[in-house]
Image (cartoon, rainbow, N blue to C red):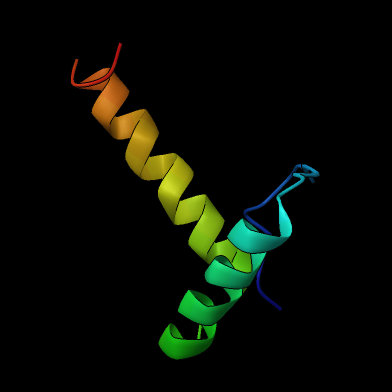
Length: 54
């Protein structure tokens, strides 16, 4: 049995427009919505650590 790497649940609210766009993207990529959101957050954190975001 694999160990869970994920430890925290975070609720995020979106407008219907944003939610529908994210669903379209994740459906086309055939990935879970939560995975897509995690990837975006990780990308922004990495950019911030590299000094590209204020």
